[in-house]
Image 1 (cartoon, rainbow, N blue to C red):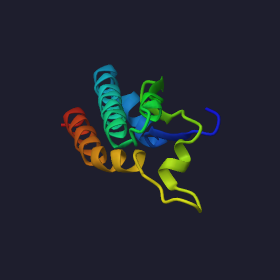
Image 2 (cartoon, one colour):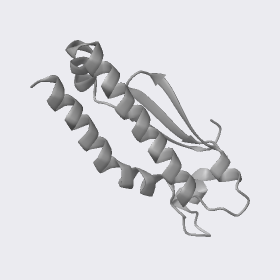
Image 3 (cartoon, one colour):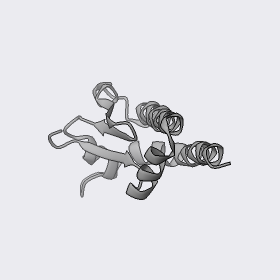
Length: 119
């Protein structure tokens, strides 16, 4: 990703080890929570992205390098300038607001998985 904007969303190492040690069902459910919420962040980021040409929106992509890890990338070279602005223009955030909207749901979903695993 050259010059774009990237957010890595992954769990704490201790939580990851706990989930992996809790059994395959918990690992599978946790992976689904990560994937579903990452895709939700991607959808919101596309909605919040400036729509002048549609290029920025088309360059917001999600990948899953590991079971409990999601990468949501805005691969357009200018996406960081859109998010944060420059000295000449204010930013038009799209990734941070998307994360802010989804974060409470992600925490709830992961908490529910953990409660179910250790009841």
